[in-house]
Image 1 (cartoon, rainbow, N blue to C red):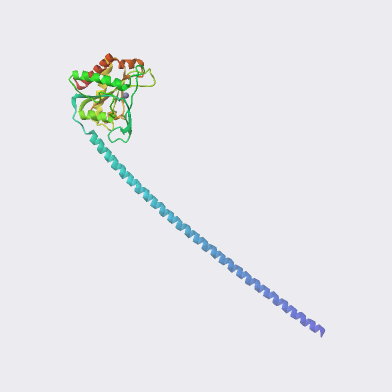
Image 2: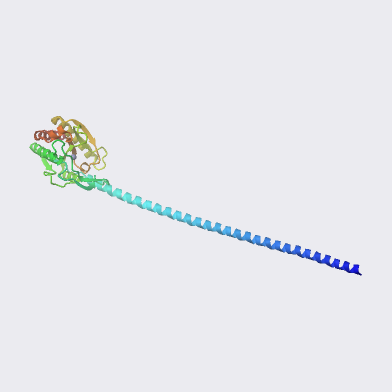
Length: 316
Ligand SMILES: [Zn+2]
């Protein structure tokens, strides 16, 4: 009986044990399944997130591209507007040049004389020629004689007055741009005065000055070929007038001939519609030449030399 009871107990225990093991196994499977499910859900969540981010990036990219396109369009429109503005300005400039270059009636019996500079320079600006965007001082102060201490504007006036007398005695009508030092006439205005006078020749008198006191000689500043402000005909006439006056001036006075200098940056030349000659009579930074240019007898010689050149230019 005892043995039977023991056997029964053992059987019960065995069965109980088996059942517990089974239950445990089942629980583990459920946990495993839940874990898997969770992981899948997480994966899905992450994928969704990634997709959303990609979408966002794509949208941002599109917005930026749109923005870029709009900016490009804006820039192109701006460029177009600027080009149109430039073209309009250029047309206006050309119109102005054309108007300024319209020839004036020239009288070969009229000579205009400009004594270079004036007592006080004028640093206000004016365009260097018809339609020019470059500007320069209206009129500079000029040099001063190194030996005589006489200012250039006085020397040029003294010679101009003598030249006037010589030319008048030879039958020319003379128009003086100035007869005193206390004036305020810009280089452009001087050219326009010669234009309005219809001068067959416009003589501008100057003295050179340079740091090196050893330099001497006379030269003429002429408009270069292709000067954008003057008519081709007037450029060529001015070159011819300048060369002729310089050669006669040098041969009459004995001053060294330094030749012609072509320049397109001189307002007093660029505004001219009449043949113009800017004569640098010599260097007042050189003691000897300064004394010569300020000597009354020598000035008479200078006036005659220039008048000889004008006569030769007109074929008289
Ligand atoms: Zn000068």
